Length: 287
Image (cartoon, rainbow, N blue to C red; front, side, top):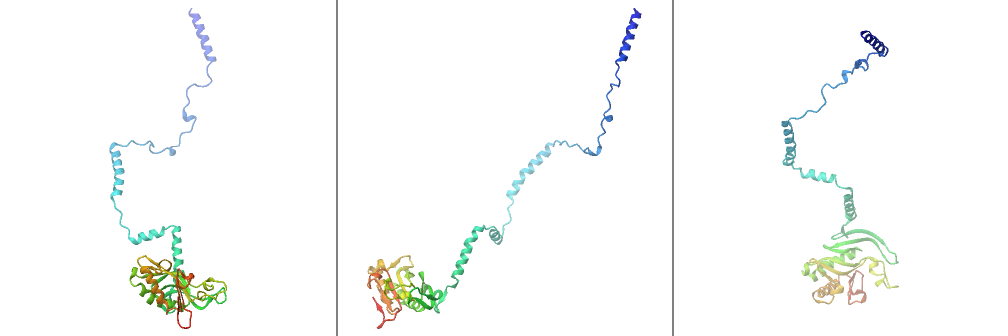
């Protein structure tokens, strides 16, 4: 029995020796397979964030909440007016420049308005020679564009000779002002119906050239008063206070002007006064 056990052990030993591995089954050390990590690439300290303590968090919240309060309670120093105006002008949009340019152009255009006909009470601009489209029309020299006379403005500028402007001034200061007096605060504007116009008398074919075509006439249809009211030849002639004023104006124009025509002259003058400086034998022609 013992002999048989020995034979079995011998057989097992022989089989174990035949199936033994050619190399060791012990794990190989990591350093034998991979090179060691270079220490220079490793961070000196851990990169894991540290948990802040409760005292640090409370301090941070306090600082954040105090910042807006400090900004709100701190009042800025007042900026000088000159600096504000400079800043505003620096940021003015380009579209705002157009009205400024237009105003400058307007001022330049009206820069020539001043004393005309050597009389400070006649305000206008020098025009010079005015050529006429029809034979007999035109102003040979020293024509002016009148804007106001003795402080009374014209509703629109009228081109004329200086003789006409001087006659108008004489009538405004004498006849017109005397007729109106203090009524409505006085006249502040003449309603001009016509000044220079190259045409025949009453624009009739074949008629003589009108004094308007020579710059020697002006038509006035009404008067604006200081209080805003108006007096017009068409609506007020022969009616009440205004009618009496118009009649006196018409009468006082005979003398300063050579020709004075109104509603009683003919159907062409129902709505205006016609004044001109034409010479007539025997004095002024007033109708």
